[in-house]
Length: 151
Image (cartoon, rainbow, N blue to C red; front, side, top):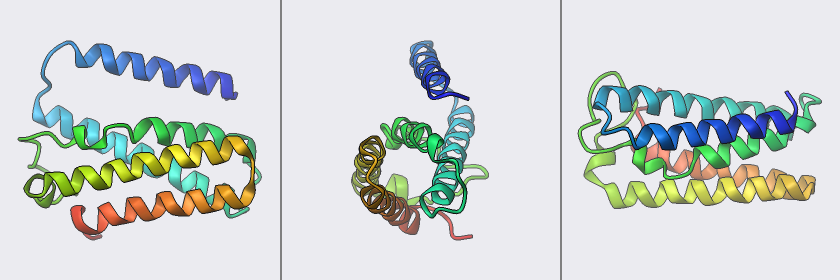
């Protein structure tokens, strides 16, 4: 898939998501399913980028698409955890809803770090990319440490 195609799909998904969001309030079960899918997608992009950044695979041309997808996917992460979506088979800990301001701060930190990674990838400097990738990983870990069930 070319970068242009990836970018087009990203726009389609974002516009579709915005239009669906206007259709009405979602059921908590549906929000949980969406959240889980979004988190799996972010994890997949992070895993793929790790292989590229560490030089394990030669797919460097795909790094920008992964970085852009993560930057888009981290926008307003806290919104994926609305009130009354704290049940069922989920890895989200109750602390998310008990400490919302702390959770929101960590989610915003991840968003900023994802934007920094996307900018570093555009710049092309390998050292800056590695540093930004590590920074994003640290923000993800900080949130997972306090707000996600341990595996």
